[in-house]
Image 1 (cartoon, rainbow, N blue to C red):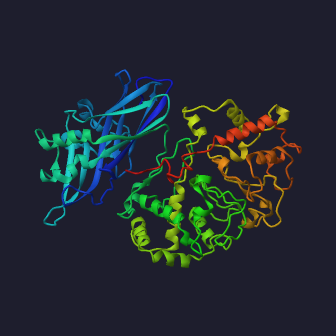
Image 2 (image 1 turned 30 degrees about the vertical axis):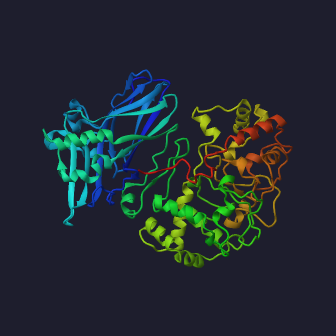
Image 3 (image 1 turned 120 degrees about the horizontal axis):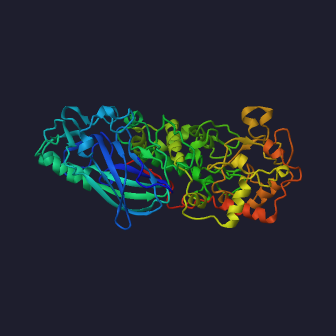
Length: 575
């Protein structure tokens, strides 16, 4: 699927988002109609081909061998094209069909995984020796109350379904274009049923021609994002088990971040995330109905609270500093000591902790059951109004998994949307350079614990702090002496906003943190080897070095992530 020109090459991804008007399209769910009859969509499959990009001078860059099998049920909703030249474009064009030669070719000759292989797309019309280009099927209930079906199959070789969409983007950067496909426009919001409940594109069929024309007008650009995103989609069999009231929720996670593996037994839905967000801000989770999760995890502070030690529902001091809630989809052990092994376990512990919200799960569920709006919300998210501790945990887990930070200056620089200053570049160089004077390497050696685009190795490390006799860290969970004074390595994303620092908030500024690592560390048997190898006198960073490091760390601030106007940031619903 290479475009005609090559280097410097980037990639374009087109994400198709099926809709019913302004709402997401949900298979097998009743749709809003222009008439009173119930209607559902059970199948939307199609074939795309011949992608072309229009340059600003009006000429077209045409693709070679670009074919896409589109399927809502199978969650095949994206298409890519490699080899974009560093040019500016103002439109995209593609066909919802194949040309006559391809349409009449032998389908068995395609490779096993090819979009045009019959076993992949299921759209080859064997008895007519051609393909169905768009299959739209479902059920409806006429006035008589009897449930009927409809089946619209668009095919033929008249090449009538050409789609052209204005959209500006640059081939110099990896780009994702989100394209909506409005099924309501194709079916005329259900009015097509008055004409016929089927068409198989026979010669002279006026309904087929009408549906083809509507199809070309049903696509529109929803947005452009300068990055490529992982296909974080629930599996088709998982989607089929969701309550009819729930809509799958798609996280847009950059491919520059590690591949993510979301919990299969708690698929994200629009309704589940919304319920989790509401619970996150619900003060009735605490004993005196005054403290919510958000009380200790403020969005403007990158979901921390700015205190050395968090305060409980009655002002009692907690044991440790509030950890930032960021990129939790990659975390496997939670809290500074790792005592929770899953996010759904983690969220219930602060509710019950006497130093924090100081409530019981029984009282929490009882309070929520008294609120009819919560019963409605739980029903939408889980398919029944039952309110339980397990469901509270699952909803909170869904919301917290959407807190992904990937839009900092550092990220924009990686996409060639901005540039780091010379000072910031120097800080980055120090950050990723090992300190090994014997080999001529003099760096800050930060990357061993904070490497990669997540800026954390998610391990438990003794980082040379003077120990507290009342807090042995990870050892409290494992009971192993080898884990004494080891604490979770937090992500450095948004670190400029999460002061004070360390598990006990002992450092007020980033400068103090750097001075700690630059100086003499507390030596013990569990001190991390990557720190123990440093000279006892410290790294010897200059004042300019330390200033550069702070400058680089500030490039990790994601203003979009901490914006009060949104809590789910750049994430979009599955359409």
